[in-house]
Image 1 (spheres, rainbow, N blue to C red):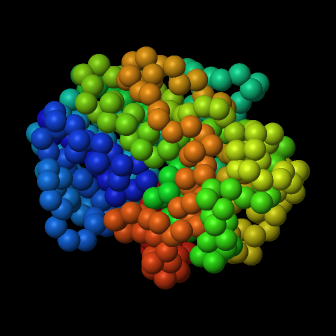
Image 2 (tube, rainbow, N blue to C red; image 1 turned 90 degrees about the vertical axis):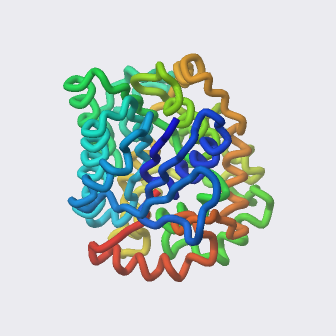
Length: 364
């Protein structure tokens, strides 16, 4: 079996490459990334440098997908949020190119990374299954673009029933290897390396923990998310949507206990207003739409993934959160330019200047 991964150097992709390397059924992995890891890569992984935002990428994708049993599409651009034309070039137009190339080459299966952020805001706190409407949260560009790609997949499935399409909707995907890059993308200059080191010095514990009223969410470790994508890519039956998250959910009441700190209650209006001010002052790289997204997404029922994919996550919520804090504090990263640890901060500062001028940005 030959599997192509688009976005193989990012948060989930890095772990998915390892997951598929260990699968004896997989003979070759075509790992596609804008910035592959440097140096030769032994084993059955063949890295290909390719930016899906370029119009000319379609032909290169066709060549890469020939002979593949499945294509896993993970590439997504988080920054620059201020320039949606840049993010859409990768997230929407790039996804269209990946889907079109998979169809053109007759790939039997397509697995796409959607998100809990595609769902309509929750009504009650009851978990929702995959039938919950994917109309998104309109104040979040991330959510709006995830919904747009969901609609592209709807059309693809209706017009081409012969291709097996799976769309996985993970909760917040965290790990030590992704912590540094995620801090850069979401906190920017508000989280310099020295502050992160102090936060992570307590082995995943914090002295004080913000408890924002109404902030209830789920997480999943990058390696567990990768296991779900691997199952969807190698299964002959997986089709449709799958929620991916671990239990228990994080609530304002449980988060302080999970991180071993004292709760500091914060009103959501104050948090949103603070983020808005910081965003307008260009002190923070993310808009208040992310606060709306975090407070609005539903809690997901993951029963379908467990039943049909045989997915059994290994890392619970507390361990996921603490692993992320340790990674943020120690500067641990991974062997890819996207997940580089503390040594990548100067590169990020340079990249941020280019991103704000509309030329590049951070990918996961």
